[in-house]
Amino acid sequence: QVQLVESGGGAVQTGGSLRLSCAASERLEVHNTMAWFRQAPEKERELVAAATTDDKIDYADSVKGRFTISRNYAKNTVSLEMNNLQPEDTAVYYCNLASVLGAYWGQGTQVTVSS
Image (cartoon, rainbow, N blue to C red; front, side, top):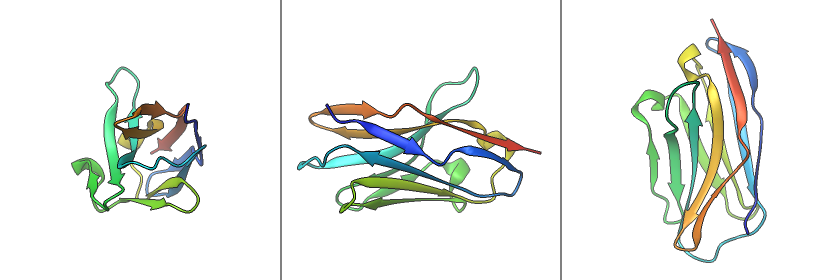
């Protein structure tokens, strides 16, 4: 069972920056995707950014140009650099690891952006 541990959430003002990190307890030796999702109150969980082992990266339209996802394969981590944060970015952010072996979720980390 792979465990994902997130860190780096917090509270910032509009225009601020945060960096989220997620560490996986083990490395999967199959093609996989590490991603960040978020869920705001009373809204469905949505994909924010994803990065595959063959270097394909995808972003939600709402974060393009502001957020950057990156993977460190040596450390089994994925990070999300978030710049120019807006109040609508307020949500619980979840790390996800998906492969043919299954899907795993972190416990979530709160990001709050005040105006």
